[in-house]
Amino acid sequence: MGQVVTREVLAGAVDAARRDSKRIVLTNGVFDLLHVGHARLLAECRAHGDLVIVGVNGDASVRALAKGPNRPLVPEADRAELVASLGAVDLVTIFNEVTAHDLVALVRPDVYVKGGDYRPDGAHDSDPRPVLPEAPLVRELGGTVVLIPVAPGRSTTALARKIAGGTG
Image (cartoon, rainbow, N blue to C red; front, top):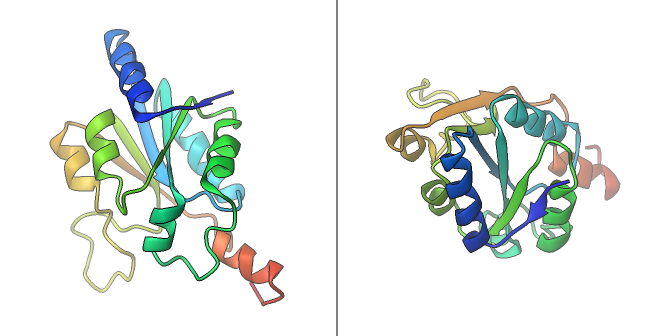
């Protein structure tokens, strides 16, 4: 079982992992209502390295991202604890910035994994998916970006709509 840690503790753990030549993997997200897409993302993270770190968006950053008027549905501490309880995860930290740039700079991951709801750098401009904002920094720091396919029809937004009595 993983742990929810402060950035200071995280920095120490990353330094120790580097000294032990461990491959460090980072991902981040809201993780508001866990679903199979989250599980697949985290399993993919584990497949790419030795130390899996997850940044969970704090409540303030979720609101800033305009995920919806009632989001997040689950408070940040609960979301972080749930993610940490999953077997693929080693460390979880909460961040309140709108992007994970500061977290990427702190961790300097060997591999940064995100869902395919982002488009790769250089993808055609007609691709409606947003470009992953942290990708250039990850590469500048010597890391690799891995985008995994989304689980079709699986999203927190769809689940929230279904719970509220919508069509999902």
